[in-house]
Length: 319
Image 1 (cartoon, one colour):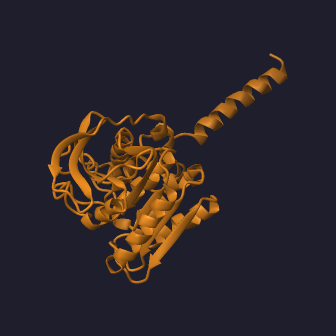
Image 2 (cartoon, helix red, strand yellow; image 1 turned 30 degrees about the horizontal axis):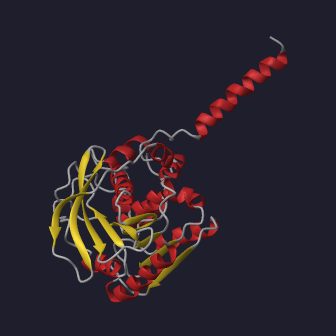
Image 3 (cartoon, helix red, strand yellow; image 1 turned 90 degrees about the horizontal axis):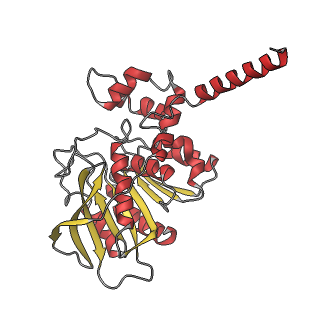
């Protein structure tokens, strides 16, 4: 074989090896690339229980399908005739609540009320294994794709609702739900805008640094322990953690806006998480706003009304 041919063949082999090495984690279930390759068809929303109405909106417990599981959700629909094209809508992603304590119709009542009164359809999914929803809980959304999968299927199900404008749907998320919101946005470009409160939205090295209790390995079968056993920490496997982090894909938001809210006194999720995301969004050239609330807590208890008004106005402008 001529030397040039040998060199060309060797170069091709080396290039292929380099490419494989550059994308070694694309098949990991939690990787953004793998999650983008999957489908999230959702289903028709089925009414399971009609609840007493709010002041200006109807309330129902509904269900939809996610990977063959029935997931329950709270649905609120404004009273009256929808605007041309349908109501704007919000998928509402709650934070971590022990699954055995979670109830579909409880928690976040004032938040849902504020959005519903402002003329938004709101769908608050349980996540699998929560309340009466089928399936086993996934623990958290940082180590398993399952809760994000449930939310992406909720988004698709909401788009099928006749009174909703499928082109005007955003996401709201608190704490773990903020992580889900950001992850869902970089996976599905149809999500128009994201509003995140006290979100776990820093890259994984920050999770390990600022929340070390989440980064300690344990002899268990939970997804976190499995990933740590397989790959180690972000310092040991930086490419893996970049592949699974939505923060690595902020440029793919393509101009869709993100609004962040965080109390500086938050002892559950440090404000450094939202600050890190804001820096990343700025570097990626994406529209964003970060509101910090001096001394306020994880639920923005001292500034709840202000933060809700800002969030309502954000969705009115963005959807």
